[in-house]
Amino acid sequence: MVTDILPTQAKGKPLEVWFQDEARVGQQGTLTRVWSRRGTRPRAPRDTRYKWSYIFGAACPARGTAAGLVLPYVGTEAMNLHLVEIAKTVAQGAHALLLIDGAGWHVAKALKVPDNISLLKLPPYAPELNPMENVWQYLRANKLAITVFDSYEDILDKCADAWNFFATEPERLTSITQRE
Image (cartoon, rainbow, N blue to C red; front, side, top):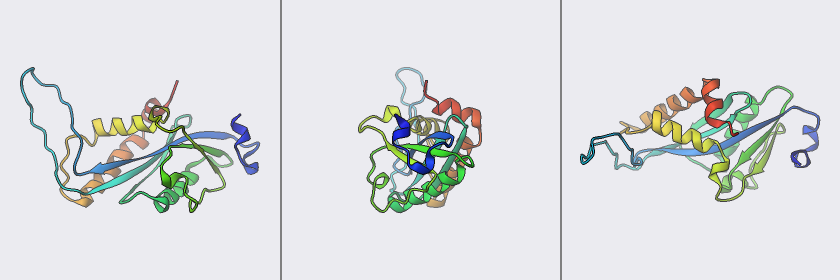
């Protein structure tokens, strides 16, 4: 039972279920599919430089709320920063059960988990269990596709714009992240 994995300070508090993941965005983009006439080869820009940033995102589908950061790197320090952001977004007096994948920085000994968050690691090789994967797919298809970034600052700005587009619309957030 879920309550068996929660710490003592979480007992009796409202429980929020959150999902967390990171996405790399930048140059060396992925292929993008577009509608075109059969037999034609439409052109799409592709950047061949090697600069990127990471969107750290977490969402609570039940509340329609999210917490995110755009950072130049991944690792334990970045995850600690993200955990602080999530902790600030958890409802007052509630406890968050944060579902994470098996990335090394999610389970590092130097990870500082706030008192109002408990981590629950998802099984390996099961991205379909984390609805944040849907968020990255949605943002890549609607806000980050076919983009050649002018500079590193442009990458950061576009990532922030894409995340804010997603995170500021509770209905969109819930629709994309809710599992039935």
